[in-house]
Each structure stands twice: as C-alpha cells, then as structure tokens.
Length: 597
Image (tube, rainbow, N blue to C red; front, side):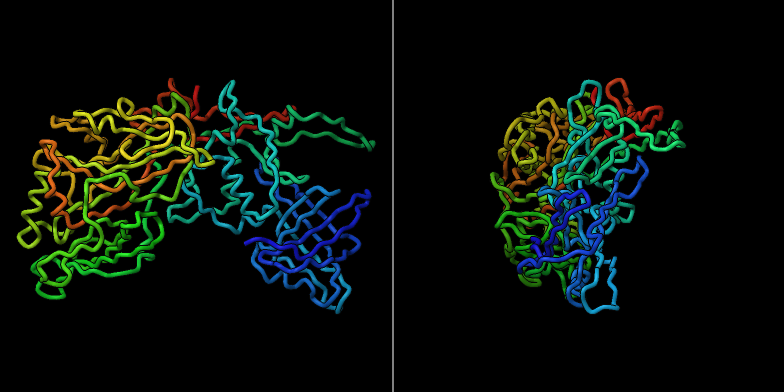
C-alpha cells in the first residue's frame, strides 16, 4: 500500500540551514496539513555502538505543536512501519525513518498549544519483522531486502569495502558472495528477525551499515582507514589524552560444513486445495463404506506451484490407504461409484507428447558462483516424485482386485521413462544466462557422467533440452514407475550393467554447477515418454494408466564425497579480512564459501 503525505513543515537550524519535514501515512489520500514546532523541533541521534557491531541505528525525535487536543494521537493507533518521516536539508533528503508507536509523549494538562514528541527510527523496526527468505541470497540481496523492510525512503547505497574474494579479484563482495537462507531458521523452522539476519550476514566480514546524509553506507573500518582523507586532531585542553581501543589478538576458528542444503522445494499447500472430492475404495471389491481407501480432492486453484490450465491441483486424504499429500495431477481415473466396474477420467489422459509447461516453481533462489576449481567439489541435485500407476488403488498391493494384470504388464513395458524439464539460470532482470541440457544422454544408447554429455548451455531453454529419468534394476522386467518414484541419474537406451556409482548416488539427477551466478528457475513439462526393453513405446502403458501425479520438485546443493577438504584445489574462506586501525588489528571470518585460487 502506498503512503500519502499527511503533515509537513519546515524550520531553520542554528546554522541557518533550512530543514523540511514530511510525514507520510500508509493508505492516506487526503490533503497535507502544515504543522508547527517547539523550540527544539528535531534531534537526530546516532547512538554510540561498538565498532564491530554491524548495524548502527539512528533515531529522530520530532517536537510538534498540537493545535488541538490530541491532534496527533491517531499516529499511535497504527502498526509499526506505516508512518514515515522524511527530513530534507537544503532541499536534499537527509534522514528517513518510521514511527515507533510504542513511544508516546503528550501532556494532558493542556487542551491545546502544547508540544508532542514523536520518535522515529530507521533500523529498529527490523527487530519486529521475521525473516522469510529461501535459497541462496547475495549479501547485497540481504541488504536490499532489509532496507526495504524498514519502509524508509529509497536511498543510494554507498560502499567502502576493502575485502576481496582473492588477490587481484575485481568482483564486488556484495554481489559475489552468498548466504544460505536455511541457516537463519532453527530446528523448529522458526526464523530469526530481519535485524538478526542482517547482522549475522555482515558481521563475518566486519561490515557495518548506517544511514547518514541521505544515503545507506556499507563499509568496513579498513576501507575508511585506507581510503578516507585523514583529519588533524585538534587539542583544545591542557589535559587532553590519547588512548588505544580494545585489541583482539586471540581468534578461534570454527567451521561446520553442510553436506546437503535444499535450495528450492516446490510444494502445494494442501489447505488451499478445495474442490470436488472423489472416493477410491481399498480395492475394486470393496464391500462396504468401511473399506474406503482414500479421498482425492481436485481443484483449479491452490497456493505453492503454478500449473498447466488443463491440470488439477490434488489433495490426498487417507482413510486406509496412502498418506496426506498434495501436488499437481495430470491423470485421475477411478470408479464413479462403489463397484461401478468402469473407470471415469477426471483430469486428462496420459501421453508421451511433450512441449508445454506442466509445473513451474515460483521461487527462483540465487545460486552463487564459487570458482572454477571450487565448483568441482559440489553439485546440484534435481529430483521429482512421480506416480504413474495402472492400479485402481495405487497405494495398495496389486492383486486380482487391484489390476494385477496391468501392473505386471507395466513392469515389462515401462522400463525407461523420461519427464521434460527446463532448468534456467537468469540474471536479476530475468534474462536467460544459461540452461541445463542433457538430451545428448537421453538420445544416446549409453550413460554419461555429468559434464560429458550433460552441461550448461548459453541462452534460453527449449522443451527437449533436459530430462529427468526413471528406471529400475535390469530394465527388462522391472519398471522405474509404479507408486511414488523419484528420478535417478539420467541414462539413454542402455541395457547393460550400470557402474556401482549409479546406485551409490541414489535418487536424483546430479549436475555440475553453472559457470556464473544467477537465479535458478525450474519448470516441469507435460508428457512422459516411456520405452520398453526393446525401445518401443507401447500405447497400452498409457491406456492402462489410472494415475499420473507429480509432487515435490526439488533442487539441493550437495557436496561431492571426499572433495570438500581438497585444499590443493580450492580455498575455504578461512583467509579473511584484517582491519587495521593504526596499531589495532581485528580479524573477522566468514565460513561456508569456497573461493577460487
């Protein structure tokens, strides 16, 4: 909601400088009222903080004359952040902050003509806002989101930073270094406040943030010492003294690497799936309502994922079968009523035809570039759960009352299955930088390790560039489909024994990191090409399929085994930032990023 100007006024300082004051209120659309001031109209204070504290807040006390009884009391009945003060000095923005509604000072001994003190602050509001970020974020992204949350006026960010990624690096620290949002949630998934996140992001680099003279300044003391002109000390007393501040010379290094971090996970909020309810019994021979297996609720709208117009959101409500879950459905075929003996289609027929978007994950987490050598130690792991099943009740064993014949035929005929995806790396303006391509593996008669026939290509993705793959065992009389199944490392039409490494990798498609930083976008496509052991597509696979459901598209950032501590290839960010202030040395560290030699 936009803010409207509700009060304005001006005064001259002791130095004969003109200060204009503007007060804005969220949702206000009326005319602005001119206000008067007391003898001390405005005091802006930057409270003294330790030089290693990252956030230096400031506050402004505004003294207004109340022409009528409780003229400004309405400003204290609103939520924090919805009243903003902008102070202009000689026509240029000088300070901005929002009203703290908990601080109220007004004398009740007068009916009118008395002073009211309003207290505004810039960063204090961040203590009341919980962090809600996901995935990787650059330091600049954390700063911009935090400043935006303060609701203060838009300002330029001035940087005075001495830290470099490595010797000779020209990369900007704020853009080239990222943090994982997951670190700011506890084991109960409770987030830190935005203030805490901002502090803990800046602290390892000994960076500080302050609003002053109409700008946001991000700096470290080392940069000020080296880059700013020195000023001579003026001795104005016979007993002036010079002392040395605190010295830090004992540093303890601690490093706790994460083996796996979830960057992106697309889910559907089950509470937002509301629509038609379909009953599936325990089996086709259900004899009473007590043998209900589960209910399926289908809806055209829900929160969490974007979908194809012809698909449905689904929610499973288990009775005797299945588990509570939600996702996107392309095929749902079940009996219209108990013992009906005939399947009804409630969504779409399954098909091998591809070329359209089925699912898009709204989140686009930032993925940092960790260097040509450092990236060898890490992979992205792409996974998706699919239920492609011919059984009446896909959550119970196949038997004579649950399509046992069709189930056995699927095991023989659905040996290689593929789902199209688009995995795109975009810049901050949404332009495609790279996209992942592994179609050379799919179209081969072999397999390939990531990087051989699977790699990042420049530009926008097209359907057919990348695939996820399902298979099982010998791929002759075993299918990777049936029940909920997660994709494995992609292979082509390959019928021989796979290397043991494929089993050790488990589920998911492991891919190398892209060569630059960017925002990751993930889409799942329509259609599921399925081949048998003879590389034939049997239409009966699709004719007999009763359920085609999708859930939990996921991207994880994983460490390759035994490579993390290969220091000859990469530096862990233990080499850090030394801040020298004359004879005092400070050391700050940030751990978790791998930096290029």
